[in-house]
Every structure is written in C-alpha cells, then in structure tokens.
Length: 332
Image 1 (cartoon, one colour):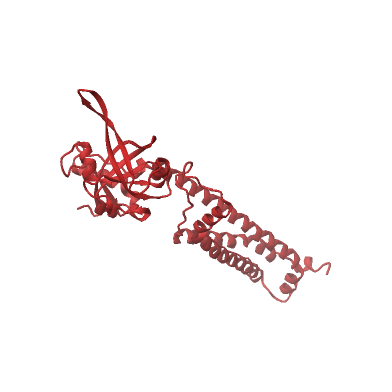
Image 2 (cartoon, one colour):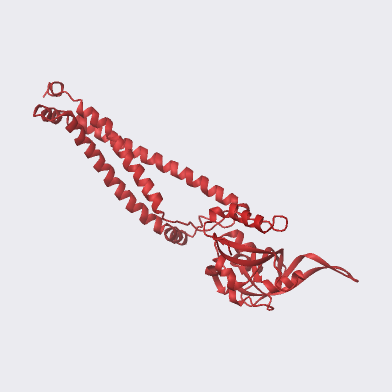
C-alpha cells in the first residue's frame, strides 16, 4: 500500500477442483475472497444476477458461481453443491477424496465464457479451513494499479522489494496475455483498413476535381484573361477540395461516434430479433461487442482524413493553374 502506483489491495486464496450436483460435473477455480476488500480491486460485484458478494459470510460455506456453470449443474440460489478438492484423505479404510458441501448464494454473468463457466467465489475463512491453514493465512494479494499497462513492471518491483526468494508476482499479461495481444493486433489491422478506406475516399476527391478542371477549362481560361493568377486558380480548387474533405470528415465523425456509442445495444437488439448469436462465449472470450469512444482515436482519424483530403487537392489544383488560355479557348 505504500507504493504510490497501488490503488488497492485484497487478499485471496485459490484452489482448483470439481463441482458436482446430481451427476453433473464442472471443473472450477475456487477463488476465496474478502467481499469488502474485493470490491476495491474487482468489478465482479457489478455483474451479479442473483444474490450478492456480502452473502459470502465466514463459516457459511457459501459459493458464488457463473450462470453458465449454474446452468450446466442445474442449480440456483440456495441449492447445494459438492466441491471435490484435488487431494485425498488417508484413513484406515483407504484413501478418499476431500469433499465439501457449499451453498449457492450468488450467480453472476460477466459475458466471458472462461469466467462464467469455470470461476467460483467463496469466503477466505472457508477455503482456509479446507486447506487446513491457520486463521488469517492467505495464498496471495491481488493488487490494483493506477495504470494496468505498468502492472508487469510494478508487480515485479514490489516482489523484489519484499524479497524475491519468498514472493513472486503474476500479472494479467501472463494470465490473459494472449487476449491482449490479439486485441492489439486486431486494432492495428482495423486502423490500417480504415486508413486505406480514407485513402480511397481521397482518390475520389482527386478524380472529382480532375473532372471539374477538365469541365471548367473554358471558365478557367476566361478568368486568366481577366487577370487571375495561376496561384489564385490553384487556391480556388484547393479550397473546393478541402471543403469537400471537411464536410465529409464532419459527417463521418458524427455518424461514427453515434455508431460507436450504440453498437453494443444495436448488436444485442439484432441478435434478439433474428434469434442468432454472433459472438458465442464458447468460441470467443466474450459474448458481446464492447465499444469505447476514445477522443484521441477520433482526433487521429479525423486529422488523417483532413490531411489526406488536403493533399488530394494539390494535383488537380496544379493542373488547373497550368491551364493556358489560348489552348483552352481555341475551339470555343
């Protein structure tokens, strides 16, 4: 907590095992938490469909699971589950797996198949008893940083300060790094595709202005004979092309921002209308299309569109400025 980059700290203990009910079996990563402190480092409380984290009282052996796991096991609020730990108890009668009955006190839906199907939450004291640990003994601490992209470096720095022989750090880039790398690559590719689309639009401006120049050669020649300079002719067509680019960029920015703010709701409505799920949590990490409007991205795209539209005016304007009055008026 003394590190200025750490916003909050919460203890946790984990154990892998199986959940069983009426012959149905589901693997689970049981994550023991302190409900009050967990809210400071996690937003899982915002995704509760039934029950709440505060129901994970010490000694009650309550459990919170995802809706996907609840559906597979056929349980609801108040039902009993059997947790089978990956350990055995040796007795005179032989070896028996360690099992414990839990009561379902909450069901959540995050939208990620990995979490909704395989994550369970219980109280620290209850899982500590299952581990046969001392009171207040925990496996680790979950840290929340002010900058999640600095988590790898900062976490290892803290581990080294505490003593790297006794502590180690595991950050989100190790647990979900493949998702982060995939999103970053997709964002770069989508940015490249959008840039190519803008470039095609810029070529349309070039072709439009070239046709205007060819159509207005006589008018340009008359203006030249009246005293217009090549610079003024060039400036006229540059302004015309830039105005086209500015209007198109503004319309595209407004429509794009509106679409970005409403794309999640629109996709959900379309899925409900046609009865087909575009993103299945069994295949993809999430089952919805997230969208976040970022001012720097909007400014970057709009700036690139304005620059390309301005550059697209240079060649047609230069051709218009080179128009010779005698040549243009020869057949008039």
